[in-house]
Structures are given as C-alpha cells and as structure tokens.
Length: 135
Figure 1: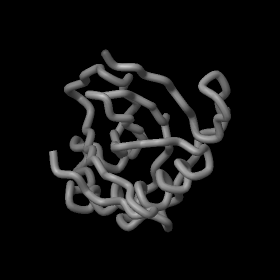
Figure 2: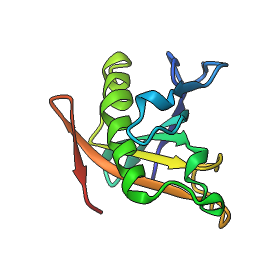
Figure 3: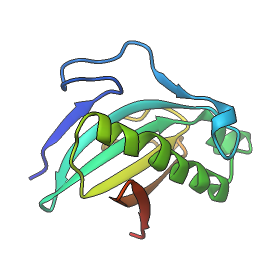
Figure 4: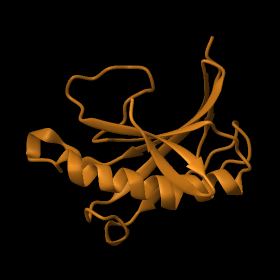
C-alpha cells in the first residue's frame, strides 16, 4: 500500500503551502525554458521512500513544436541537481529514489491526460549527486 503526502516548495509540513509558485528562470535552465515547481510528493513504493518533484514546463507542449526529449532530459538532470538536492537537504527529507517530472500542464498525480506532454526520470542521490536510474 502506498503512503502519499504532499509538500510544496517552502512547506514546513504537509499542511502549509507557499502561495507564490517557485519558478526556475529560463536563463538557469540548459534548454532556456522556464519551469515552475508544481508540487513535491512523498510516496512509499515497495518499501522505498520516493520523492516526486513535479514541474510545469509549457515549452514541451507537443502541439506547438515543443522541446525535444533530449533537451528536456538535460533540464530534468539540472532540476534534480539544482532544485531537488538542495530541497531534500533543507527539509531533511529521506529518499531512496527521486523522480523529476515535467509536464506542459498541471495533471493531478495518478491521472492520465492524453492531451498533455510529460517527461520523467528517476535518480538515486548519493553525496549530493543525482545518478540516473533507468526504468
């Protein structure tokens, strides 16, 4: 059985949230796109603690010639290193696996939307380094 708790950037506990979304500026991303941190989810999967960092990245929208997966992957690695790792340290979170996802629109966790474009990758964090985990 999965246990799921929601954390938002800046949250001290699951009941508090930051009212202004956290935006990663375009000049800070390898692809040049801007992304917004939507939510951080804490989940237990097969006895492992997973942290899911979910970002909104409108530039990957497939209907407007969106950003290719290769460029998006560089951004996902960057988000793991520059956002997820410091976030984990700041809030003293424990994780076995970090999943970073970017979607062109908000999608509720666990729901499907055939009109949405979404990319995600998993990482193990060792000594503040994101190590890609192939599914």
